[in-house]
Each structure stands twice: as structure tokens, then as C-alpha cells.
Amino acid sequence: MSFFKKNETTAGDKSSVSKIVKKIESHQEWWGRWLYDSLWFLSRTFGVALFGFRLRMVERLPKTGGLLVLSSHQSLLDPLLLGLATNRRLSSLARSSLFTFGPFASVIAALGAVPIDRNASTVTAMRTVIQRLRTGAAVIVFPEGTRTASGQLGDMKKGFALLAKRAGVPIVPVVIVGAYECWPRSRLVPCPGRIRLEFGAVITAEEVESLSESQLAERCITSLHDLDRLARSTQRGHVLH
Image (cartoon, rainbow, N blue to C red; front, top):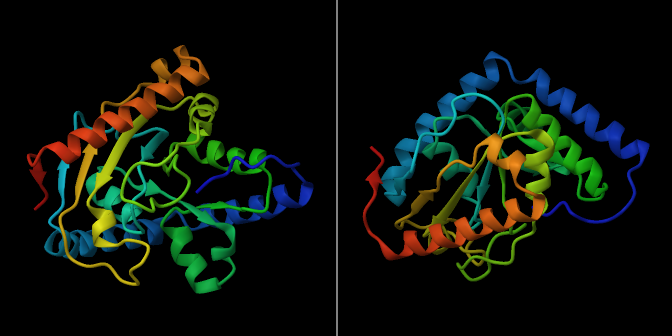
């Protein structure tokens, strides 16, 4: 999802997003944890059976504290795949309009979704994400802004670097390969296939702070391209079971 549109922040924007954020926070207690854990177990069971996806990590992710998960974007399966692959409860960005239907809003709020108003300003959207990161959440960001139309990495927006620097959190780059073939934009439902997730080394908060915004963005983008080539060129990896 892209949130780097230039327009003015309004009091209405802030008020609307603030109300949604408060609603989310009220759902982050036991029910949210139970729902997330239950769906994780079921999805892992069916996901491995249908997609047999492979995972390789250079290192374990930090268990606590804010974390920016910077991922390529191949399909609607991506947030689910990332959640199944990590030892962290991940939050995904979601259109604020999805929170207007009560029952569904309660579910995605409990699962930690971060509401982003596409009609609001860039500043408002970024503040929402930074606030979530500063509270210790692990948030998924897709720098391509949308799902790939070809299965290959697309152009990447660099605003994620500012998010990480303002929030003072580490970044982990990750690419997903094979999900596009399982669920391209042209299909209404996914089909079985082989999916690989390739995680790079964590860029620590200290490294994030020491690099300029442009240096950090270039390092992350280069890492994503390197990981993408690696994922496509090898068949090795840890099979989830």
C-alpha cells in the first residue's frame, strides 16, 4: 500500500484515524491473542499442505520491540505467509474503510491491522505507522505499494526509511517467491503451488540511526533484489512442518 501522496493534514484526518487506533488498542487483549494464535495454527496446517512453502532465515527476528518487516508483494497471501513464517505477531496495513463494518472491523482490529486512510495525507498515514512501531509492534510494509503485476519485483518507494528512522526500529528485508503463481491478480481464488520466503539479515536500530535516509533506503532495496535472486536460484531451504 502506498501512503506517500502529498496533501495537507486535516483535523478530521487525525480525529478519524485516532478513533480507529483507539478501537484497535481496545482489541489487543486476550481475545486478540487467542484469535491470532488460533488462526495461525489453522493457517499453518492448511498452508503447508496446499503451498508446501519453504523458509530460510539468516537470523531469528527480535522477539520484542518495534520492527519494520520490509517485504516484496506478490499476492493477497503475503501477510498470512509472513505471519506463519515468523516468531512475531505481525501487523499489516489496511484501508480504513475496512473498519466500517462492525464484525469484520472487530476481527481485523483484534489481529492487529493498522488503519490507513488513502484519502488522508501522507503525514497522517506515516504518524499512524510510527505510533504503532513505537509501541513495540512488528509492522509489515510493502515498498512496492501494490501487488506485482508480473511476478517480478516492481519499483519501490523509499518512504519506509523515514518510518524506521523516526520510530527508531530495526528493519528485516524479506522476499516472497511463488505466491504470484499461486494467486495472481487474474485469479479469484488461490491454487496449490510452491512458495519460498527468503529473509535477510536484520538491520539493527543502531544501523538505521547511523545511516542517512537515502543510504538506508538504497541498502534495503539492494538487499531485497539480492534476496529475490537468491530465492529464485536455489531450491534449498527449511521446510515448515
